[in-house]
Length: 229
Image 1: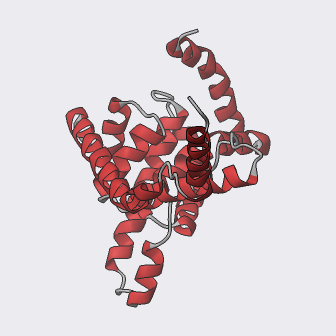
Image 2: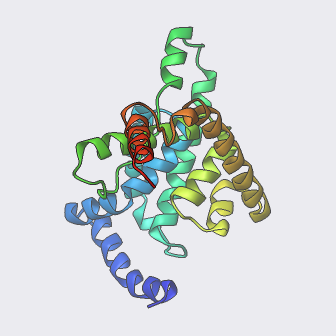
């Protein structure tokens, strides 16, 4: 079944969910939140760059959305509608932050060190060592994404992480589709450069062949050389 066919099937169920949530059905409200939480959190976090503040944005946006469900005309999907509300709330939060007095340098550094906490997919292996390595890699990616310029980071999260279409991203950010493509290309280039700079110091350790492994091969070669041809 194609994605368009899936959307047609999903719309009636979504309409029923919206109607029930608008009537105060807590089960429907919880279902909407659970369905959209990850995307909305990532969008908010890409703008405010702070875990707890992104959660605050999400809460405020949900309150606004549920209070205005009666105004949801279903011309777009519920996901698109909610994403736009979260995006606007996050932008307002960031603008208010700019108007606040500058924090002490230590606090600024602490905030900059925070990373985007993308929820794990649950596909990690049970091996503790593998899980540790995977989490470290994710943490590295999160920090690199967090360092991107605001405009590039928002596009990268929407397109590459949340798999929003070029048109959806352009509509959300209020920019042209061509600008979305350009910013995504530049964001990926900056991300690769940042990761390459960080990983460069570890390249000498890749495919190491020294110590006991080197000695074992050397001993084997010497042993075979002693044998008559």
